[in-house]
Image (cartoon, rainbow, N blue to C red):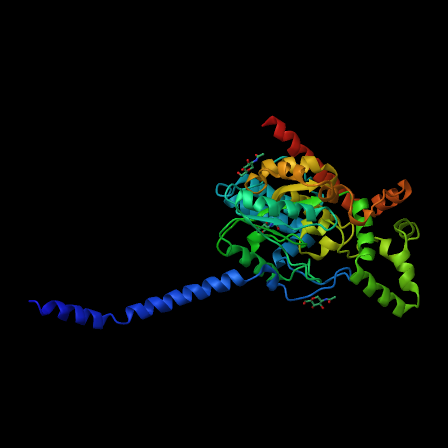
Length: 401
Ligand SMILES: *[C@@H]1O[C@H](CO)[C@@H](O)[C@H](O)[C@H]1NC(C)=O
Ligand SMILES: *[C@@H]1O[C@H](CO)[C@@H](O)[C@H](O)[C@H]1NC(C)=O
Ligand SMILES: *[C@@H]1O[C@H](CO)[C@@H](O)[C@H](O)[C@H]1NC(C)=O
């Protein structure tokens, strides 16, 4: 009897000698997987480098065939969609049917801003696909401050220039996949055009909480103009490029005044209808389609409005910073709770980013120049007013609550 114990023990021990090794290997594998997942940076997904200001890619058709057909041949597809939806009206929510209808007749659809709360209670990702020159830098600063307080982490975009705003199909998919590996609340900021997450999601079926900030288009265009000249690298490259074309034209470009550029209809300030332009704000809301970057494209502007109303929790307005912060705080409390308090603690210099741009360059333009630009960029104005109206509705709604 006494001998059998060690015997049993020994045989069990011998039979199972490999279990610790298996456990060890399993642990190693989990560690490796964890390391792989956590070490992926969202920016690594974007290999294709594209030059800023050099009007990026002009050939990227990333909507599906069906969606393109929808755009090109709205009525036909619209009718077909409606017909199929009739069969199963019980299963499809009315809101979705209306959405399909709007998308099918987008160009002539009446898209109205509302105060609807688009924030889903269980969303854990916040995406700020920053329109440049709209005070996004300060908003990121606020997010970094809020991260500790509200228990999320902010993933800053490493602004290695050049970076693409227009993404290939595969790049969009990589971005979405990267988010799908984030199981803790996360905010992310970067300059890129709207990506429809639901198209690429494998596990989840929700768009992130999208937010953005816009600004009076005339002031923004002027700010872009100044920024191109204030940035040493960009200015130097541009001066060299122009000097090669015709001697001394580089310096003339650098010294040009914004007003002269507009009045004299220099190439940089022409804004011809249909010209691809990657510096406008519409594509940031419209998305990854060639029509989004075409100046005054009706479909592009309508798509931008549709996405703002349908997918954005908040689109703030730089000229209405107090309202923007109040609406952010109340519509996206998970991330922005306490933002007004933090904002009020910023010193004047930091706050100034919202009102007075760096370099002090943004003088009000003359009425004449404003008129010219508002006429030339009427779609930009239209979408800006839409965002302004929506923000006002959301702000007014807060007092009702
Ligand atoms: C755009 O891409 C398509 C498909 O990749 C190609 O066939 C076409 O020639 C391209 N067009 C231009 C203008 O580069
Ligand atoms: C909007 O929805 C979010 C998530 O459900 C909620 O936390 C927030 O309080 C809502 N805000 C308003 C103004 O309805
Ligand atoms: C986004 O993608 C989903 C799924 O593919 C689709 O149902 C929806 O219509 C798309 N939204 C837009 C605005 O294209």
